[in-house]
Length: 286
Image (tube, rainbow, N blue to C red):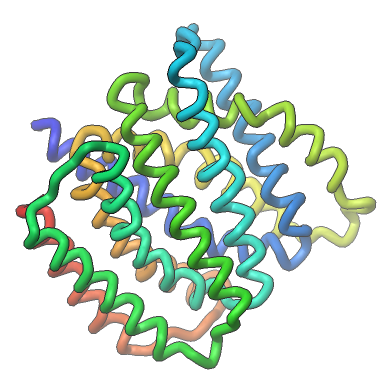
């Protein structure tokens, strides 16, 4: 298996894991405060990441890596989870998931700015087309929209796109799981203190579904998914593999329908077919 194919496989595994993030977050914020959910998931993942780094005796990052790692941490460990948790107080997960379709374009742009990649013009046309398909579909879901929720989701896309590109750039040298692990460890002291501060006064009213959702976003969304995702971006290219995120909204919508019983209509499948075509062709021109 060549490096590019391996990158796409790892990227797809990352997308599948991330697809459950927003439905799980939506379920968790029904019982947890968004701030507590953000810091608690980072704390749990940070403890596990630190244990992995010690277990495998990983060398510490050099001084020049600290600032980029801190930026990755602020974007994907704190920024994106917090902004999406805040958004999900105003919109359904099905509506929020649609915005994830804009993430590939954001990632590709930052891949050029930070990763030094130069995709062909055809790639940008296909990437924009895929994003417009997803954004157009989002506009048809106006009944579920909220200006505040939409603003939080748009901000999260910009923050996450930068965090993905910066993390992928570091992964070429440090390794995929090492990057997210060091990023989590850097913020662990702060996140631990904030977790204790925002901890619910009583856990008696916290339902089992919310606890399971917290476990999912902590273990899979915050750590395991990034192991595959950053490796995929580093091997297959930030802009190219990033296009797989166009598929994430549709996996997420299916999960929202199955787990949260949120309704989705038949147009989602037509749009999804167009998005799959864009991804397949964009792979050739990336």
